[in-house]
Structures are given as structure tokens and as C-alpha cells.
Length: 273
Image 1 (cartoon, rainbow, N blue to C red):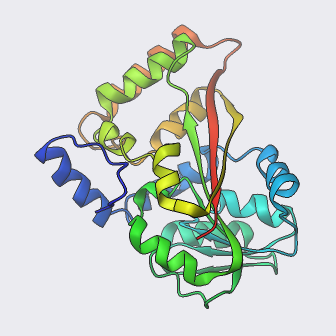
Image 2 (cartoon, rainbow, N blue to C red; image 1 turned 90 degrees about the vertical axis):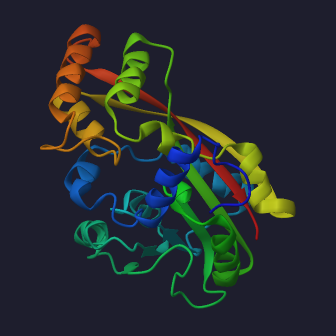
């Protein structure tokens, strides 16, 4: 289990569930790929602008997107001119990334984990984990990423952290998840904050930044966004129908012009290893 302190202590039962979740993390999204591709948020252009202006990122840098999923972050860096290698152990998600991005000659995907990427030593300039770091074993990851980074290369950990308060919709959506989503609270506890990321990077910590991000969704988009989450019961599972009924009620009571807005802070942590 992680040793640098971002997993809250939730009692024996949650601890057991968390251990199972970590072991099963490479398979949790296999039945959610289509929703993930269509309904997960991207990352703001301001993220790249910051890396370029403050930390010297250029299109000549090779990027390893670790835990690349369906390639959402990989696309951002490909469109900026980078060579990108997507490291993803889940075959269904990796296949979706290849289907979307595989025609680009600057993209390749490998079947490997964050802790054992299969990449050559000192072969990448930037190693990236976007919306995935909470599934990794950080002590092993730190050693592996230090191995594959060139001297002076940078590591970037990014999350789209959904805001849970500020509007009736955001507050209602958070309550819906806590009521109906199977292990939402346990998953949420795994997200790291700045203090934890400073411990992960140690003396190599460079900077933390936050950027505004949002999704404007109709009812279909909101349902797809919910079902892309690993903790949402799928069709046929207990609680699925009641969860969707609650979601429709929330949408109908809070939508403006047929849409609701999911608001995020894109949190970025950068350093050397």
C-alpha cells in the first residue's frame, strides 16, 4: 500500500475494500470504455501554456502518458506536437486510445503498468499521470519514473477535481454519489493534495497549479459522465435504476436551458525525481 500518506484511515472494512480496489485497478474500467471516451472531461489549454512558459516544455519533448486510459491527455500533447507513448494495462481502454490516436505517427501504446512501464531508461522528457495516480503504488512508481526520465526530466501528476459545492446542481450531484455509488467515498479518499504530492516529489518538487475546467452537459451527457465512473453501479447491478432515477430528478430540478455544468479544478503537480 502507499506509504506517503494520502489514503485516509477508514476502518478495517474500508481498508480491505481499498486493498482489493488497488489490486483490481487495471480492470475497473473495462466495461465503461465507451462512456469514458464520450463523456470524460479533457484538460485545459492553460495547462500546456503553463508548462511551456514556466518550465520549458517544447514540442521536442517525448511524453510518457502513464495510465493513459483512452488517451484523453495523450491527445492534448499529440496536438501540441509531442511524441507520446501511452502506457496502459487495461486492454479495452488501450484499444480505445489506439483507435482514436493510432494513425498519428507520433503515437504508440504499450501494455504495461505505472510501476513497470517497459520503457527504456532515460528515454522520456516528461512522464505524466492524468486522472490515474491514485490507482498506483507510489513508492514503486517513483523508482520506475526516475529510471525512464532523462536527467533533469519532469514528472507531472494531474487531476480534474470536481467541485462539490457552489451550486444546487454540484451539491446535489455530490449527495447523489454518496447515496448511490458503491465505493465512491473510498475512491475519493485516495486523491492526493499538495501536501502529499510534495512528499512524493521530495526535494524535486517544483510547483503546484490549478486551472478552471468545466463540462456543459445535457441529460444524456450527464448520465454518460456518471456511468463512466468506476464506482457507479452498472445496468443489472443493485442500485443502478434508483441512481439514474435520482439523476433525472436532479437534472430536471437544476438544468438551465436543458444543460447543467460540472465544474472542476484541474490540479497539476510538477517536479523532478
